[in-house]
Amino acid sequence: MNHSNEPLPYIEESEVLVEDLIDIESNDLIVYNDEYNTFDHVIKILMKVCKHSIEQAEQCTITIHFKGKCAVKKGSITELKPMCEAILDAGIQAAIV
Image (cartoon, rainbow, N blue to C red; front, side, top):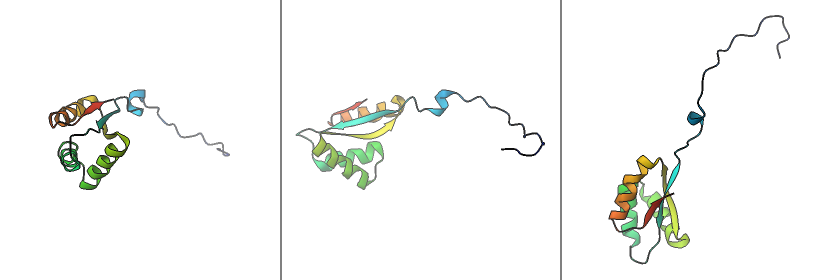
């Protein structure tokens, strides 16, 4: 609170778009469990396609195995689509949600 008689400094308002404040293109790349792919194959593909570290890829693969699926990457459709296609091409079930 300003107790003096001095005027408050003028702060110019800037225009901020709601789209700039909220990540409206936040989608998940989901990888699903199956009975065909080995842990090693899924780990290798997550490291190659999603640029995961070995630890990230292993943790995601364990989650996929025990929970049936895992969100392995978050991003825009434009970013995730080629990743999803590469995972599918490797014989692993995946989808963007």
